[in-house]
Structure formats: structure tokens, C-alpha cells
Image (cartoon, rainbow, N blue to C red; front, side, top):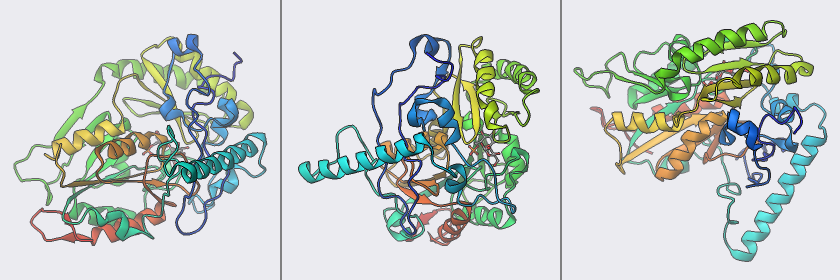
Length: 410
Ligand SMILES: O=P(O)(O)OC[C@H]1O[C@H](O[C@H]2O[C@H](CO)[C@@H](O)[C@H](O)[C@H]2O)[C@H](O)[C@@H](O)[C@@H]1O
């Protein structure tokens, strides 16, 4: 195996190069190639790589995966524009291959459905439409009428635009007001890869639940609200606290290893770490990967996933944003009830765990924030944080009755 093969070489292919049409966003999705490439067993034994979270592996190289994971830069005003265009100014072999895969499999899906009148086996949700949750607001929330809504919001790329400096990913006051208005109507949680305290510093709303470190550190709400009784204790849960010392240790080691690489940065998210390479020269991405892997070789109970221009290191425990969603629903007394309608909005691969939980429940909706087609378990889409804000504004106006019933009136 070459030194590029740090990630499973091609577990999933994503249509990275097909631009989203205006209006309803996603029409067809690229396929999941089950078993197309097995993990290198030796390496897998040493370092857990979560295929579900690694996502875009076009063409088999982790480097290509990294290249297609997110925009590198932002526009002057800090808002991420059409990052599809910036991420792929000149399509290379991998991008062409992705387009061909996309065309081939979408054609295959159409033919298959035409012949059999059904969705191709093994390709769940990939051929479905993922319309705009704004354009189809009534359809999206029609099933929620009379049900109790609960709102889950990712932070980076959902409430705040993607920016070059992770410490400056501020949300606007308008967005904060929109979230506040939603939280007045429905129980609302922020579910983020950031540490709970860090994401709270950005959001600053005490009436919310916070699930930081990819859901491993949950707390809230600090302030009484329509949905929390005066005498109710705040929810608190930590998954994987036994890993805190090891995470701290790896943080220091990685910080030292990244020091000579211009632009590399390690963010301590308490229960997990983020190694950012957005500001690293592309020629040095491989070095970032090698350094991270060489450190993690010593830590068999940590796993490596990746997000938008970031490598993420977390404990190998079965806890993720989906588990956090289930935990919070249960804390609200909503577990197993069929009159509950969770709404989860997120832009990242880690949000897919929550989208999958909603699919499994058969209740609520997952909304992917993205300007271009991606393989996703979400059912609807929004293009960017500006659209998220518009959606939240509409959502806040859709409550029926009062007294904490928080049912929808679509
Ligand atoms: O779950 P999230 O709230 O979406 O957090 C995921 C990661 O978000 C942050 O990184 C991303 O946003 C940065 C600021 O826009 C950007 O510079 C970076 O390239 C993105 O990956 C955060 O810094 C990470 O720790 C989170 O894991």
C-alpha cells in the first residue's frame, strides 16, 4: 500500500463536481460502492478509520478526498460563496471521474427504476430528490402538523459561514435572533464538533441545549424556558470522559508536530481534536496526514475521521451526533413517541449520523446545508447559512397554541 492510503480507498463516491441547479437543489446522487475497496487490514487494526464519516473518496486517494472536502478560502466578507467553483477551479482527473460515476449511476438508477419500478437494491436514498426545505416548506413540515417539534442545529457551516480562522467563525446577530425565536417555540439544541464551551461562546443563548464534541458532552438548558419547568434539572451527559487525559496528551503531541507546518492548527475540542489544514499549502497536506497518522499509531482506541478541511480525532466509542439526538429526545421525555417531529439541520459528514437516526425513526426531517449534491441521508436541503436563517424564521412562526405544547401549525 502506498503512503497515500490512509483512508479507506473508495468506500463512498460522491458527486463532487455536479453543480446544484437553482430551485429544488438535488436531483440525483452518486452511488455508494459497497465493497468496492476493502480497508487495509493491518492499518485498520492500528488506527480506526470511520468509513461512514470519511465520505468523499473520489479516485481512491485520501489527498483527493481532502481536496474535495471543502472550500479552501472564503470571500472577503467572510461568507462562503459558490465554493464548488473555488474548490475545483480546473477539474482534474478525479473530478472528471466523479462526474462520470455520477452520470453512470444516476442513469443506471433511472433505468433500474424504469425496468423494475423500484429503487436499485443497495442504493438507499441516493436517487431520491432532496428539495429545498424553503421552497417546499409546507411539504417538508406538512407531516409535523399537531406534532411536537424539536430542533437540532449544527454550528459551523450551518449557523455560521465557513471561514479560514476557526476562532473567528462568528454567527451574526440576525442568526442569533432567529435561533432565539425558534427556541421560544420549540426545544432547541446545538449539536457541534466544537467543545461545548466554545460553541456556547459563539451562540451565547442560555435557553438552548448544547451537545459539544460531536455530541459527547451534553448540557442545558441553563435558563428556564417555555419547554423547561422551573424545577427541572438541567440535562448533563458525558460520553467517553475516560478519554480526556489521552485526548489532552495527543493534543500536545500533535500541536508540537504541526508547529513546523505553516498554517496547520490543532483545535482542542475537549473530547476530540481537530487538525485544520485549510490554511496549509496543498503540497504539505500529505505531511499533515503522515504526522497525524504516525502519532495515532500509538493510540489504538482513538479514531480518525475528516470533515471540511479538517482531520478529526475522537475516541473509538459508539457515540456520535445521532446518539446525542436520541439522548436529548429521551431527556425531553419524547423517546418512542410518535407525536414528536425532530428537525435536524447540518452541513457536515458527522451530521449524517443524526440524519440516519431520523430515517430509522421514520419521523422528522434531516436538512443538509450544501450548495452541491452530496451523498446524504437527509431528505431536504438548504444552500447556505443565509437560507438556514430564512428557514428558521419561517419555522418560528409555525407554532400552534401556547403553554409549551410546541406543536406545529403548518
Ligand atoms: O459540527 P460543527 O459545528 O459543524 O463543527 C465541525 C468543525 O467545525 C469547525 O471547523 C470548520 O469550520 C471552520 C470555521 O469556519 C473552518 O475554518 C474549518 O475549515 C472547518 O472544518 C471547527 O473548527 C472544528 O473543530 C469542528 O470539528
